[in-house]
Amino acid sequence: MILIAFVFNVFSGDLAWSYGLGLSAADLPRSDTLLSPTDKFVPLTLRGIRVDKRDPFKFSFIVDEADTDLTSSDLEKQSTMLLRYFLGALAMPEDEIWVNLSPYEPDRVVPDQLLPTDIGRDMLAQDYLLKQLASSLTFPQSKSGRNYWQALTAKGGAVNSFNKVWIVPDKAVIYQNDQGAFIKSAHLKVLTESDYLARQKNSPNKMEFH
Image 1 (cartoon, rainbow, N blue to C red):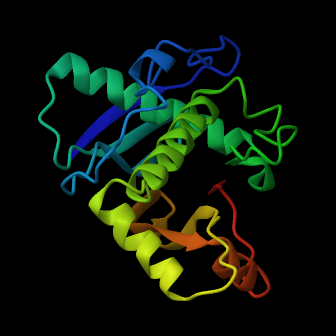
Image 2: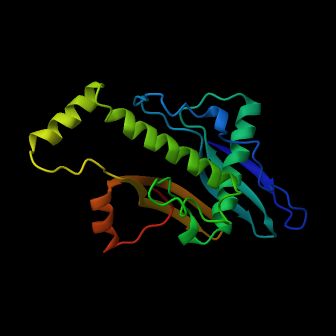
C-alpha cells in the first residue's frame, strides 16, 4: 500500500470533473460482442484517508495496488481517478448514487447531478458491461446459454426468462479514529429482481447498478 498526499483548495476548483480519466465509449466492446468471465483480478483500490488536523483540506490517501503492476505515471493517473470517484460520491446524496440501463425505464437512467461526474459515467459503463455479460452467458448458442435455456424449458409451462440483475452494497468493515479511516473490507452483492425486492423490505441499499 502507498500514501498519496493531496491538498484540496475548495476555492480553486481543483479536481473538477473531467472526462479524460476512466472509461470512454471507445473502451467498451460492441454490443454484439460475446463476453466471458475473466480470472479474479483486484484493481487499484482506495483503502483509507488521513486528515491533517491543522489543515482540514489536506488529506493523505492510502491506496492499495492489489493485483496491478502499474508504472508511476499510470499509478498517478488511476489514483487521481479514484480520488475523483471519492469526491464525486462524497458530494452526492446517498439516494442519488445509482444508474439504471433498463429498456423499460428510459426516463430513469441516472440522476442529473451524477451524470456529469466521473463516477456517474463509469457506473453507466460498468452497467453496460454487466448487461452485456449477462446476455452473453444466456446466449442460446453458448454452453452456459444452452444449459440455462434447457433448465428453463424443463420446468414446463410459462417461464419468465427476464431476470433483472442488481448489484448492491453488502457489507463494509471500516476502522476510524480522530486521524482518519481505513477500509478493511467492502463487498457488493449480486441479486435477481425477486431477491432484490425481498431484500428491500428489510434493508434498503444505496449505490446500486440495475
